[in-house]
Image (cartoon, rainbow, N blue to C red; front, side, top):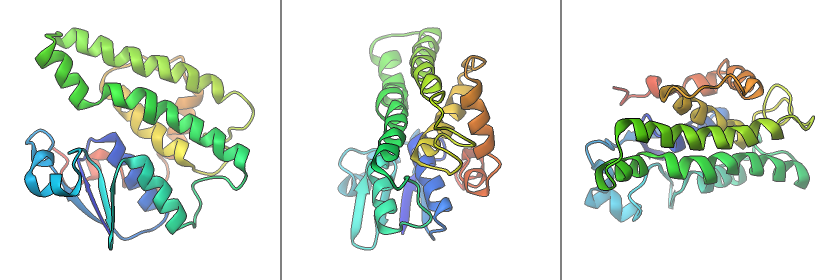
Length: 211
């Protein structure tokens, strides 16, 4: 198994956690996003979007981190990263979607570069943009965590997709100095996750391409 990624990519980060939780052997192949390696001909032939991460498992290959999480869950089901019943799985996917569908896509590097390089936004305006979407998503996330179904982690006392999505997004929020004092449950759960080896080993600073 091979995972093409970048140490600061939050989407690669969430897949690294999943691989670690499931104890899967995987070769990590770093691509320099700043150096444009993700737009090289060889990589684009694998992933026409030119995004990271990209996962290959024998004859199977795919982009899109959430597709990777679903693939890993179905192909290597133990330990499980989704609950067993449909309602609980839907809750986990809802929480995951707040990060993966609503926050990350408009706060990632290519969007930030576009609003500065093409639209002329200042560094301050870029930071305001980034913080706005983080905080809007986290407000909803924090409220949803108060429904009595969270425990040590986003759903009960077992790590799920929701934690895999949340922890990298909190990491990014801290990089951009987002005020997080209004999100005590998010921070508590993130701190719990970051005591686990699977999360520690996946952290950006522990990757072979960390700068």
